[in-house]
Length: 150
Image (cartoon, rainbow, N blue to C red):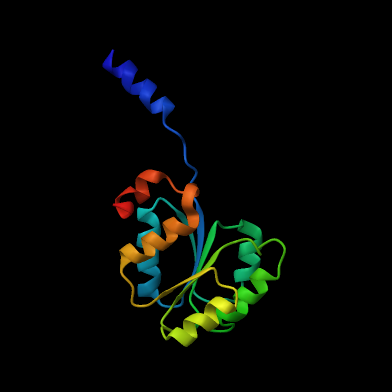
């Protein structure tokens, strides 16, 4: 009987698809931290260490969120977000700047360039988790964000 109840309760649980996040970061340690954070939230991840094919990858995979460094080899994150926001297939994808540029002037410049939000390095994992939960909202399993809301 307990086995039957257990099976029924499992059947009634909603099935949340894993949100897909594209992370564009050229520093391996920062990329590992982002990867750990996204994994703890139940997200799937595509990693890039340069911005050369970010637009193509975003068009092909249609991620739920893009986390992007600003100071990248090749095109800067600001250049890339300009292309993303002007492309019909990617213009609605939220893009968060994850950057060492921390002055109020830089923050304003980054947000004016088209980023949907901003977090400066170094950051606390909890702050990044809270920002991701805010942006992805209902796309995340509520169990993953429950502790952050307390």
